Length: 74
Image (tube, rainbow, N blue to C red; front, side, top):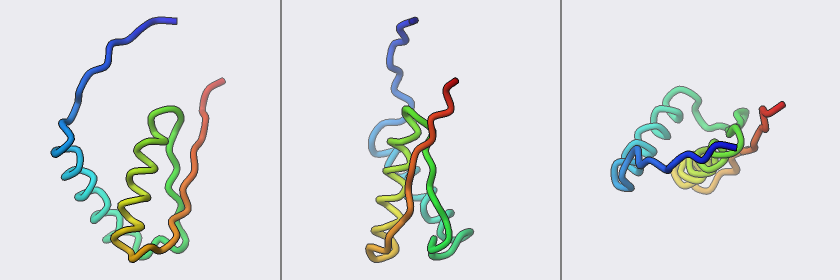
């Protein structure tokens, strides 16, 4: 197994701004998420899916957001 060094893509503040923009756009396009699901691909996509669903939940007044993960490895 190869070892890859971690690389910072976005600083925390910029990540939070990006997350805010993303969730607002999702709300504009998908409405209340009562019939939507957030899926994150393992391993790191789970972290993003959790962050997006948590932010959506806050913006929708604690409405339940269905969130899960998928492992696409063979």
